[in-house]
Amino acid sequence: MPTRLQRSGVSLLIGTMKGFFILRGGTARRSWKLDEPQFFGAVIEHTIQDPRNPACLMMGARTGHMGPTVYRSFDYGCTWQEAEKPPAFRKAKKKEKGQAVEAVFQMTPGHADFPDDWWATTIPFGIFRSRDGGHTWKGLKGFNESKSLKKWGGGGFPPPGGPFTHSLLIDPRDAQHMYVALSVAGMFETTDGGKKWSPVNEGSKACFLPNPDVKFGQDPHCAIMHPADPDRLYQQSHCGVYRMDRPEGVWKRIGLRMPKSVGDIGFAIVPHPRDKDTVWVFPMDGTDVWPRTSPKAKPAAYVTRDGGRTWQRQDNGLPGRHAYFTVLRHAMATDSEPKAGVYFGTTSGEVYGSRDEGKTWSCLARHLPRILSIEVMAQS
View 1 (cartoon, rainbow, N blue to C red):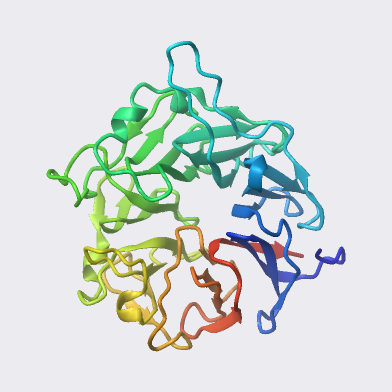
View 2 (cartoon, one colour):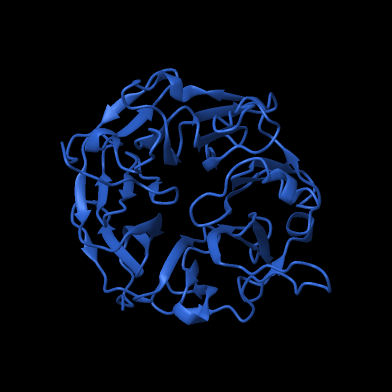
């Protein structure tokens, strides 16, 4: 268990296939110490700090025979409480085909105006809301019971692990305005708090379909609203890296400027905390067999600092060959230090970090289970 003496600086919240870990880096981010595992043996999909109440953490987990649930901590991860009523779909009526939550996949803090609000996305497609700090959860009827939901996901193919609801984005200017990304279905927007949703996929491709320019049926792997400008969106898709500027509302494939030998297929995309033109991606082999490893087993992050017009390879300190891993959609993060730190966890259990915005990398931890998610935890 972590010490109750809360240290200052940056820590990483690491979800794995076999437990939850906190990796502590202090203020200098030079020396890192790994706490003992918590929930050892459980699948920890995602854990995130509440920016409105930094001592609060929210976790989506799958705990053996008990199934998917949510845990809350109010002391930076020292102790945890399980939700009294975790996310669950309503009971099916007669002649209805029911469904069950297979995983609580992503946790999202609510809008700043609603300090007790939390959101969770699930496998299969589902959005759930808590209005009491994660104690009880209720399905978002306008999404979960939408007649359009099956149609949206009907054009593609089911991804490994089932249909993912993975990127819920809340406009900091308007709590009623949100986006969600679905794999495989596309991105959708609501302006009324989730009662009605509409596709926002113009310009993004569904390269695996006969008509790649469908209105929905795309496969976004990860989507972000840039913290420096909520009108700037990015996504890492099955079919490339894209940028959208509102109110125009058209995706532009900025990944085509990546080296052709590397391509622009991957899972993760993360923003610089203050520069809307800067994001990082971690490409993987996007050939027909989809081995889900770094291209040519030579891993590297790529950064753009001009909104996707140019990209730079960043591999100083990473393995130069025979590194057969990738980085999953929630397993890459940035901190908000003056010189932003960039971090990623691999499918082979390593954590890498950079104190200089990706110019140089160091291995911060080894031999962990398969890493599913990484988030930064700040402590004062």
